[in-house]
Length: 184
Image (cartoon, rainbow, N blue to C red):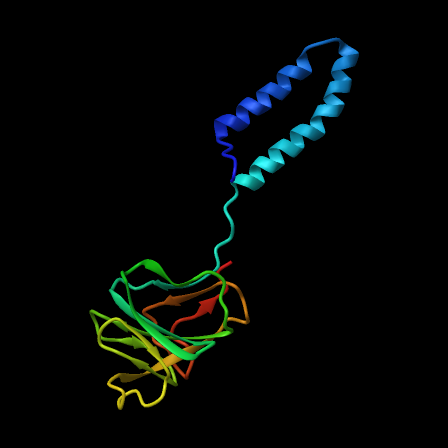
């Protein structure tokens, strides 16, 4: 259970410490000050640590365009290859596709502009479906009733968190259309 140190509570604690220093004789005040300052520092430090929120670790996709985008992701799980989709990401917003620390080094992304028909793709073929999907395996997509799409590979360097930014700028010369970064 985490104690709640509100801003008001921290101020009251500080005032309590300071009032204690003003009482008593001049020499006793110095002794109390010398003893209480480390305690005050510790109390303020502990309250800051308790109220600080933990760093989030996720795989996020941000849509820097003005259009609605549909996104699918591929990754290697213990049971084999998995592709999932569709996340609908409004223009100028972000969505978390995978929550928590990333368990793989490589992730694969495919996205389509729902309004203008453009796409962010790559050379790695994986399976997708017309509606929401979670597909095991990446081979024989069409024979299994799915479509095949080219996904772009992102090497997260085994970071716990990663973000991909989808932009209007087209990729040229084989460069990825959506740069990825460590989002921590």
